[in-house]
Length: 189
Image (spheres, helix red, strand yellow):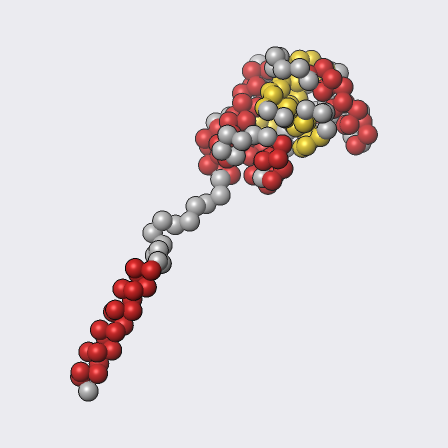
């Protein structure tokens, strides 16, 4: 019986030219303690990561597919206008679970960015995107696959609708109230 958690080795966002927009590589500590080899061995330095991303992009740049095996990593990916989103796992990982995590992340980002998932919007809202990623994948473990839950945890709080709205009418009402109170006070003297 397999009692391991679904692990992600990396999450990568590349633009349509193959340049990195966002990349997060995970090294599962629990596996390393069990004596399993590091799944990201050979991807420790920036140079190695860039070379890996270049080869991954070359293999997946054409839309149409959504899963591939590249350099010992199971890559699940989705295209979105001028970006490609990748979730990488080990070759033994459940591709449906990886795809479910990617889909939930993409739908949450779609909600937060109001259907404008493009490079400019992602860079302008990078804080929300990274928070969304952290709500989906925590230290390489998939923790949430419900897009509405992810989006609600990340969304910025709205202004309280019960706050007093100050406009010309309320200022005029306040002036009239103060005027009436002053007239009553003067009349009492």
